[in-house]
Image (cartoon, rainbow, N blue to C red; front, side, top):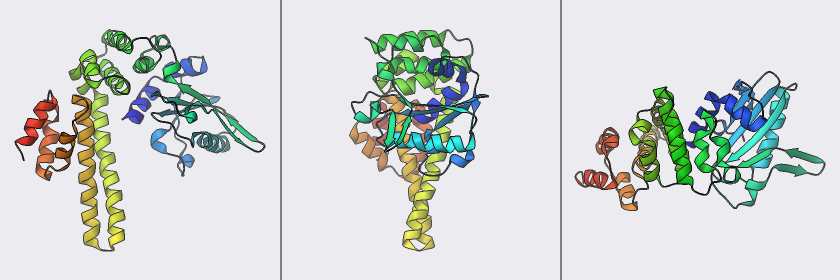
Length: 302
């Protein structure tokens, strides 16, 4: 969800990000260099924007990755090969506080080789710099502030002043997803408005994207299982098992987003629901107001 949310913000508010990161309000467009899709690159976690003379490469991370410096060099070489006349600026933006040494690394070095990039730790950035532009508002609660709840309330006030209902919903959803990294989910939903978030096109896209990705991962798991078994029956069984498990995991994520962190007993119960009850749960997802409501629903079907 974090990758999808950050991609939405960057691609729809590219000028805001260029102003923040490059110091200039440059209008940029999405870049999809197909030649960069080889391993070890991960297309789902990479964002490229381009203007006439510059490429902006962004990665948003929720956790430390010791391999990031090498990845930045790898991207740089591949991008330069394809776009030798364009300046490249690379930023790794860490969303969640971490003490890991790797989040402070902004250089990759080998004997006679040195590559530099920018590493931004949002928790060290003043929250005020994210409160002026609409596309940056969702990042403000992750930034440095004495009281993050107050910052979230200020963000909610600014979002509620936006006339476009669709945009208002999408920004509320983005803020809710990112704020949940550092604030209690129930508090976040109370401040931003649960219904506004759930009715937004972005939220529906995340739900749809999650289901599609889940099915694709299920198919892949099934194919692998089928190949190992060497039997057509095993392949089909593996496909279905993969799909079903991904559905369960996606539903757990969405339930946690709506209700807050789920008790372990409820998570286990969802994992053991029958296929028909799993389908019913998807339909009933938005009707639950508390974890107690969910627990009663599950108990009635056991």
